[in-house]
Length: 405
Image (tube, rainbow, N blue to C red):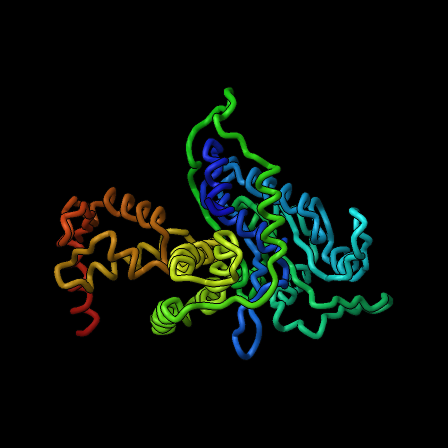
């Protein structure tokens, strides 16, 4: 099993959503590998440092995945680690210092580190510049020559090739306080892997010891092995062709420019960063294969609806309203006013995730705007169809006639 698969397997009895453990595992790999590996993008190098923010209601068990990643990274002990309540200025100051190694090795002169925040809203001491600075530090390829921070009456802080990873968690209410509107449209959310979940993975009172407990020593050893990887990633032609095809379709999306968070415009980099991390999880040959590209595209496409949710939350809009309008518009535009669930998710993935679509459909069914029927696709597999109420179609057509006249 790969490193990520092992984490998912050994935490299967945890109530935390699976996707929380999935992205926390990738963040742990990002933290220990730092800028030791990269993908040549010809005009710059792309490094696999990522910012991950686990979002969900209170009580959804967001803390355990963050704490597991923190434990593993701290025991690999090859990067600077920040947790608790810190100021961004304190982090910058510490990153600029040379630190002696605890195990007697050479001193740590790198400006690389990882920030862990089980509750993101209380992690960064309230500072209007904090998220702006984090946004600037995320782009490792723009800071090849170093990064400096200078304030009046304070000495200049210089960071050599700063490489930051962030893994945080927050409920939706606290996130409104932690992320101001300028950070949503200003680039922080676009650079952050927003991972949203609304259900626990299961119910477990944990009164009995799981059959498979988490082998912390084994996972730490494997993560340390990943940390030793160095060099340039390579992609085979088949993987490049798949990525190019997907990228072309992404650029043709009608709502690309309408995404006020900027997530869609950065999704291509997210896919490549994730593919690098998945490759490191699977093996150590620094090769990105077709499997990694496919999995990365599928995994990263959930960021767009999650980022939209954060944006709507910041302006106080109903989270389901835009998605509802998209679904109704698609049903009206369809020749027979019918859509399958599969086609809807494939075509409108940037507007809603699968759970969000199910919630929208449930509301529309309650309003008798649509009906849901089971059917079979061309291969005989079960499929769900959404059928628009003829009365809704009639109202829409009547409205169009009135507007034209």
